[in-house]
Image 1 (cartoon, rainbow, N blue to C red):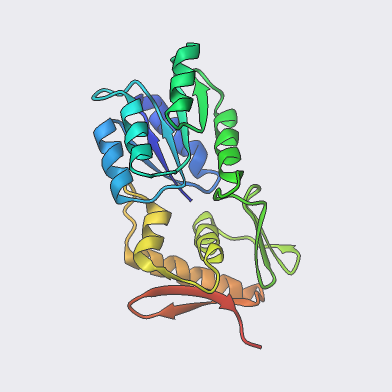
Image 2: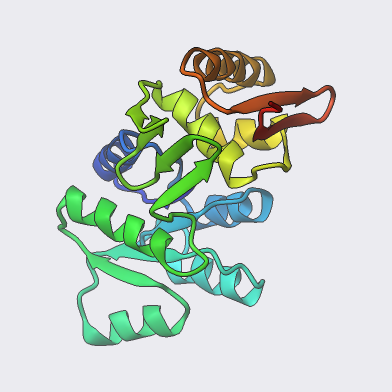
Length: 225
């Protein structure tokens, strides 16, 4: 799952993505409102973490452009503005949650997960395909009831494919979801990750298989008996 962090504090721009990536998220970062608006117009994200005190424009500009343009992506405002009027303005403008600085990183991660568990969100308790069960909260995968040891990248690929079970996922879309803008992810990198995951699923006797549609992408489906 891909998140966008809009934050100009260098310390937080390092701390927050590190914590989120350790739990399986892909994180893109921006420090300017203009950069954020451009990223949102050209990419798809499951959640936006938005600071208000940005160097070029107020973060509320980003939020208003999103909502006026019909972008319903959940937004968590992260700011030091602790006045009641500020919180009311942010929520009325379309924010889904409001976290004050300073904060505990564990609470921030928990709040983001809570947003994604809301109806229509990206996090459910479990995703199932054949004998494969993925717990999106604990980041645990079981195959025939046994815990499967997969790398973070393999798990991310599997989650993306399970969410679109029996549907085609384009290689380019998978690359965006796995690597974001800051990482040097390529189509070749995606192919390597899929190859490794396919091999691990076969080793663990999974009853699903990854099919390659040449020139198009990948499709996860239950293996034919």
